[in-house]
Length: 554
Image (cartoon, rainbow, N blue to C red; front, side, top):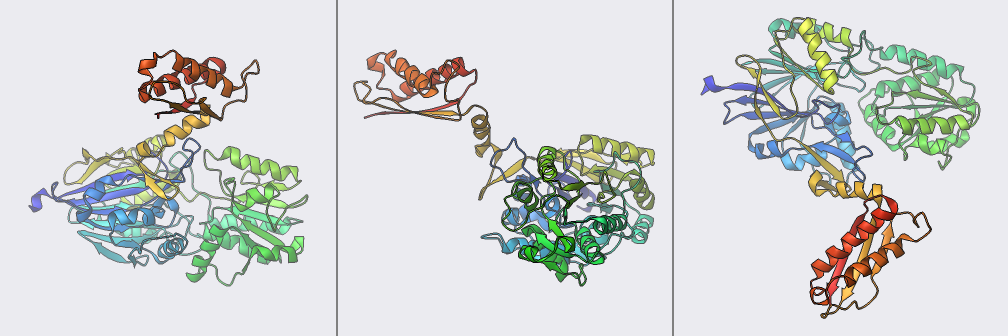
């Protein structure tokens, strides 16, 4: 019945963390809700997950509700908001709604992915409205560090929700539309039940620097540089790419692009008209340009070992090198966890006599997220009845919630992934839970963490492995010497005895200690040998290695 209808918000990723954004909005009675998914993002794996490429939100809840899923709406084309679409779409098989730029990047990514699904995409213009099940969704132009970012004004019979996506207030974003503050003010006057809002910079007072200021600083730094100039940045920041191109042209230099992800972004941005008449050259043009006429645009701002800048710094790029008198500009911030990799690249460049410029020396980078003054302005425009901080870790969410209360928001909800928040009718509250977790992309597979083998890989990386093969006859006699392989252990113990010999002796002793009549049980023999080998390594090395024993009776 209509009186049973509820409007709910259910985050499956992106709350209590930065990255992997995936949210569900539900409308209808509790036993028959229609769902809309907002964003479908990834996060990147860290060192504690050896072999894992990227991480996805666990979609088991919405897979079970797939018949009631009306569509997937994307706010913008950053990986943490759209990066999981191709891999997870076969589990959902619903219409995707995106702006032209986001749709273009999705198509470009599909071209480079073997066996990519044919995802049906409805292209939506900024300012347009689309109907997704019971939801009317208006795309409201924002400013961010990528073209065509949007807030979603989600209208239902129970009120309007603003899902902010990623944003900042920038009147001169470099490319595309600036944030549509007049439209946000109009929506605020119409009435906003809830604001689901970015918390990334909720700890920072003031405002984020404009891209126009960054473009000006880049032009000055490039003009003053005596030798080659290399600029590394986030590949998705088309405004920054354009600023580098314009700075190079003003200084009489040509731009050589080094890195596939940059070319993909440049191709789509050019198709959408965001790079004007700027020209970008392939890396083979490097050898034909004098030092003073060259700007390199490079991937690798996070120290990625296979990216262009790391290979140049390490001296193993096939076309390009940097030498004394050259300049490298890091027009980026170091993502927490990447400090060591970035510092390694910087130190290698310094050893070559290359000058390094970061945003500590010049205003050559800015965040794409709102600081506290920008949050204050948005809350003032929208005047929401409910605030739900998202897109941040616990500290970000808490500080954002404190600010919302200070600004007079009547109801402030701190949610978590998997917590279902009823936004209307009645007071906002958590009313249910859904299963949440992560999925790993491991090579060509998408796997549950418990089935991934990553736990065993961590053990192997810490204490190596020992493999033992045994053959016994039906009377319990050892047919041949145990075959022992030792991987990842030191060659010898502290007195020089090889670990392979240590394991060999321990296994033989263990087998001979078993009565002959019981050696006909391969499981018993194998377990005895495993325990003996592990104990011997522990005694001589002090670490519990991973031991695998294959015992067979022939």
